[in-house]
Image (cartoon, rainbow, N blue to C red; front, side, top):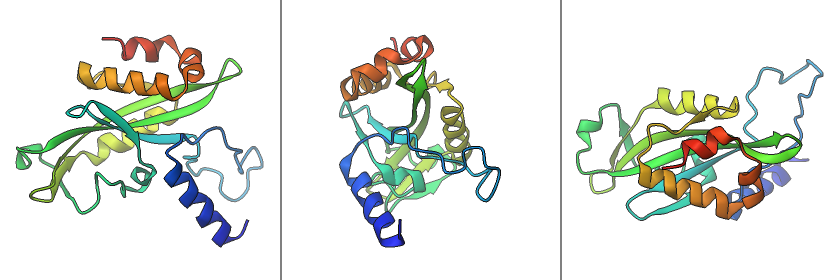
Length: 177
C-alpha cells in the first residue's frame, strides 16, 4: 500500500467513528524489523462526557489530537483549571476472547478542559499507563464516577452487544454501579 492510500484509509477510519478491530499484525512471529513496537490497531479512544451523558469515539486521541484536546495547553496541576469540564478518555482494546471478538482491555483517564482559558489538565503518565493496561487486557475503571461508568457501559453495549456479551466478567463488574 502506498503512502497516499495509507493516508486515505486513516482519514476514512478517523471519520467513520468505528472501533479499530482485529487487524493483522505485520510483525507476527518473524522477529525482524518492527518487532518490539507497540501495535495500536486494536485500540480505540472513547471519550466520556459525564455532564452531557454521552460517549464518542475520536481517533485523534491516539496522537493527542482529538477535538477535546485541540488548542488546549495541558498543565500538570488540576487546581490550575478550577472551572474545567470533566472528560474521561477511555482506551478500549478489542481482541478475541474464547474465539469471539470482545472488549478485552479498558483503561480510563481523567481529563479536565476549560475552553474559556484554553487550558486543561491531564496526567501523561496516567494516560500512558492506562493505555498499556488496556493493551495488556486489564480493566482500569475504578477511578471513574458511577455516572461515567454507566455512560461507558451503555455505549459499549449499544456499539456492539456481541462484543459486550463476549467480554470478561471483570469488565462487566467494573462498569456495574
